[in-house]
Image (cartoon, rainbow, N blue to C red; front, top):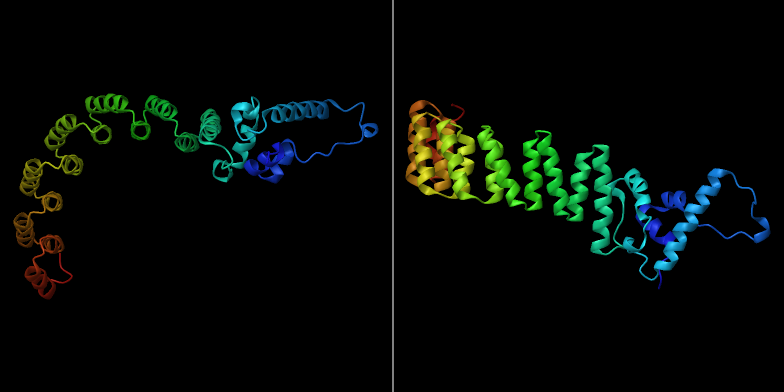
Length: 285
């Protein structure tokens, strides 16, 4: 069964918006036609007739916008309806990608980068996602740029922005970029710099990702020396090292950090010390 142009418009835009563009227009008897329409009605009539003529020639592939050169004229209506409220299920994957890319381009022109990202992601348009990352980078929003490059699977640009952020001492985004790019060698360089600057949270993220037991052990020991017991606990937890976890618990008791000691003993499954703290130090830290 062939798909009527108005039915497609109605499904995509909703019935009310479809009527604004074309609607269900009944052919009037010849003798009832207005021989002198005003300019606005005449222009609209010509636009509608042009669209319907193209739609008619495109059957039975009505749902493919590649056969409808003027389909982009619908983008403003789609924008008005909102990307979350349109139905594109009648189109094939290629057609949907073209429509969503057109929407993303329009959102980009309007400066709505959130919906631009959403549209390009839904369109699975990696090139556009990477280009959006370039725009975020130009605006110094490196976290958003890294995210776009990651979604685009653009390893080269992830490496580039990772190196740039590392040079600029933007270690947070350097870590995110190198992790997304899957580059262990570069991550070790970042990890060394993070340790030197005592940025324990980011260092832990790097070493846990690398799953390097020696680096994690050294990091945990260094955190213990600096009395950063919560970070030491996270490092030894990643190692699943019962002895080191108990060591953290013992030192935390001596330092008066009862809640942290409790957590360490719970992680090491040291039920005896957990019971001891519960009985004697409940509510203390």
